[in-house]
Length: 380
Ligand code: ADP
Image (cartoon, rainbow, N blue to C red; front, side):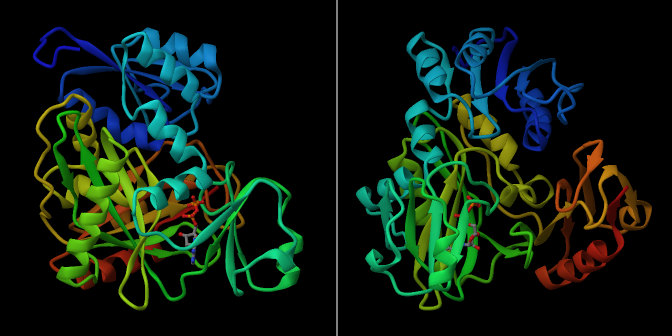
């Protein structure tokens, strides 16, 4: 693809969910037409993309046909057929992230091995193809069990606190990892373009919902010291370079009680932990992704304002057509930006939207965020 070409180019995005929804306007800013493929006919982007196709992202022929119909292929979800991506690239199609990068990411065991091989700090682990007997495990309790594939948003991750907990672990390929106690969970969004330019967004800090295992609050800037923030960016940069990544990637890390940073996992696409960049930073993670895959200079990632992001999850006890309680009230507050994903149906803990709250300080934004959480509810 010629980056100076003025003819309309079609970007093909695998997935048409909420991340695609926010990628769309960024792609259009750069003059791209957008085609999307998603298994759900009522996906958030179904009526918004220039071209929307319904199809299985794991199906080789479907992904091949879709990829051949566009000029450039990217993803908004990593569960896609990588063999098709590899073959599209072989045919000369531009595909970012690349198939080998994505293949490593799709399997938690391969991801951890990659960190070890590339001297990227990560919690100690061992990998197995068959579930070992409890007596064979050389890690003190508690430890963490992760399935190699099939888990997301905390499903497929089990904290093993007792011998009894181990009995319910399925006999499937997976890994055991040292438990990182009292860690702060942070994320650095990092972008790299094919020319090798790398740029990080300031680290954000996450606070998890105690039962849903989804991010409840996200703070930017984080409470990391300047030295820790610098180290986090160094690790994110090293990770991006090791993967020869192209596009935006979330590098999720633990800050241990002793002050060490360990990579937990990466997602080579726009990510929940970068939503607040739309209003909070000069360039958004979505714009940065488009710049990166077009091999344009990466944008300035400086903060415009401290921010807090809250996920808008379906309220417990409600399933059915979604209604938004308290929307008018929260939308009146200066610095509050509500993003609804346009999903018709709500269910407990379903991600229905997010809200970014800007404030003069993170504390001021947090106070507004608590009010938003108490006021805005997704019910049916
Ligand atoms: P997923 O891919 O489903 O998001 P993660 O590997 O990110 O799974 O794990 C989900 C959550 O489980 C993490 O955000 C963290 O809260 C907890 N967790 C994962 N690994 C560890 C660990 N080694 N020590 C302590 N907590 C962990």
